[in-house]
Image (cartoon, rainbow over all chains, first blue to last red; front, side, top):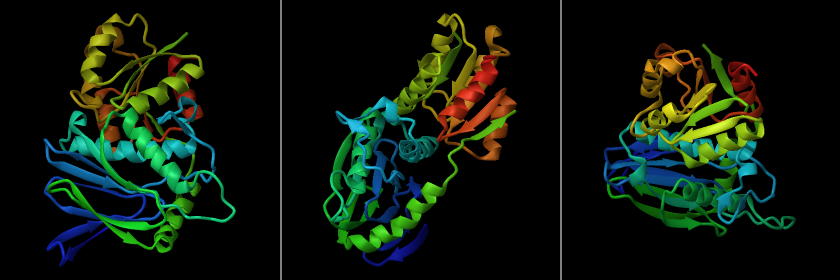
Amino acid sequence: MYRKFDSKFKTQIMTIFAGEYYISSSGEVISTVLGSCIAVCLYDPVNRIGGMNHFMLPSGSQESMISNSMIEKEKLTEQSMRYGITAMEVLIGEMQKRGAERIHLKAKIFGGGKVINKNMTGTTVGDKNIGFARAYLKMEKIPIESENVGDTWGRKIFFLTENNSVFVKKVDLEPAVEEERNYMQKLKALKQKSDVTIF
Amino acid sequence: MKTIFAVDDSPTARASIEYTLSKAGFQVVLAEDGVKALEKIPSTPQIDVFLFDVNMPNMDGITLIKEVRKLGDHKFTPILFLTTESQESKKMEGKAAGASGWVVKPFDPEQLIAVISRFAGE
């Protein structure tokens, strides 16, 4: 991630990349560029803390993991799902450490652009990421206040944690997806074993 | 059947823990934060291993472990942390508070079962 002054917003903007998250309690603007990945903007309007992540489910499989908008319990521990769940738990946990309260949390979700491949049928990577974000937030009872997801374009988003509004700018999907591809490779290469310490 | 008492504020995490451990033959008792856990522990007849998250509302896992260690019945019951926290300093805080081990999420189900079985004396 990096911080840069933006002349349009007349403030410093923190830009995050796939696999990262950032939290602000001082009204900063957080930005990211999304292809098939999802960004969840979470905020606690009472304690005035906002955070955003940028992640995807690493599995390339097309099987459905979600039914009735809930994550099936048999799928909860699958590797792909575990990384999505952890990406969300890290953001929620770090926001709680900064003073956010779970009961006040609200969400806005973005991304999940569809790369249309002639040979591909059924669910796209973007669809799976959208389905996961919706189902996870439903299970956590965190309301989704708005969303701008799917379709065949990429997005550059700006989360204004000062008032919890999000600006979305359409961008070309391919370059955004290309950047996220490196992240997906890294996720797939991650060790599957847990980090266990016995005292 | 061994009983695992797990505390996590995330409904998804609780569902995942319950699914993983009950499939492995454990009885699972769940609580959603430290305060609720302390209310529920005295009425749970047998607890072989505790499994705590760290970041939770009302009472965090580190405070909870200190409270549980004060309970006569659970002075020596193994307590594991299952958390997204991976910093050494946090782990040391957990160890000092009386934890037996630390598992960083995302967890590998087989590995979690193996660690818990070891502490449960299975």
